[in-house]
Image (cartoon, rainbow, N blue to C red):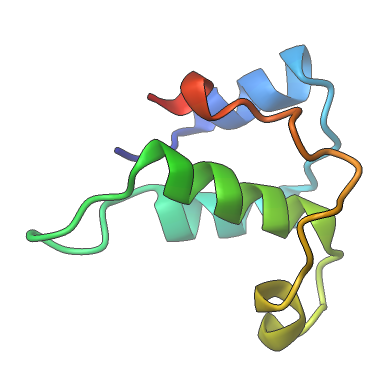
Length: 84
């Protein structure tokens, strides 16, 4: 499973999420294709990682992104079922 520009547009328009162009580029770079031939992204992988990316500002270190806690204002807004 991958995420496309159409999916990002859906989040902007229907979920009313503020996704910057930098965040969009990062999302598409990371999840626009599967990791390799033997592995694929699941809907939950994409949901959780996009949620974390949207939670932090651009320029935040990767360590801060990876250690982000679950309690965030958009938790539950991006429904995992949307990506399946």
